[in-house]
Image (cartoon, rainbow, N blue to C red; front, side, top):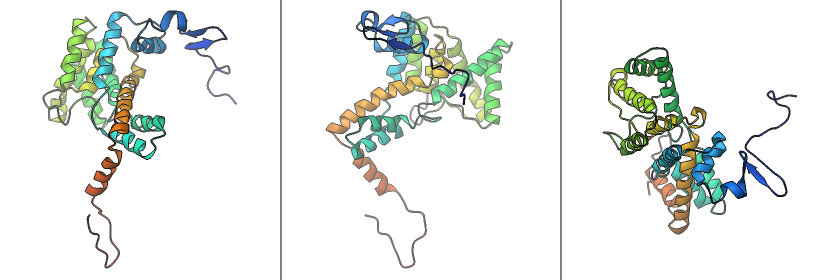
Length: 269
């Protein structure tokens, strides 16, 4: 039985023998350890080439921007899992990452795909704002979320957006996707009837696509960044546990909306 076209497993990422470890064509011990940063190593693993200083700075900026985001659901899931199984750090980290989807962590990939569609229309001859309006309208008609816009706290605009855009412009990154992101922001009120300002999940693909970062791997950046944040939260959980407090608060604030047996009245504690 064949699965896919290859019958022999092959990889271009790494290989080793008794004396040497090769990673993307480089001797790990002689050329990489102590000579490249972790961010640079990630870029090499992903793309097969060494990052330029500009690419490295942009990728670093996005990782710093998204590593920590407070007690969001993924962090709460991670801390409560760790409270229940403190011997399984890896399970607690996994619990936080498994929630990566269209709302949390996965929104950057979705926004990147939207920007890619706008760019495709521009390549076909459409003007920037017309292309953005067409794509937002089409996504709205298909009931697809316009990811990367709107924030429950930062109503005027997520402050990380302007910082990431400033860094990108100072480094003279291709601004095409920055312009697309802002054109989408302008199009949203015309389609949705309300303003939704850029948030960090749209800023990340806007700056990363400008350095040629692979569209298909955009989701990996917030996953990688948030893993660092989760490990920090779990270290704090060891010193100042709140995992059970989070579960107690959920139980305390939950209202039972189902039926009760005849003659039974539940008393809230």
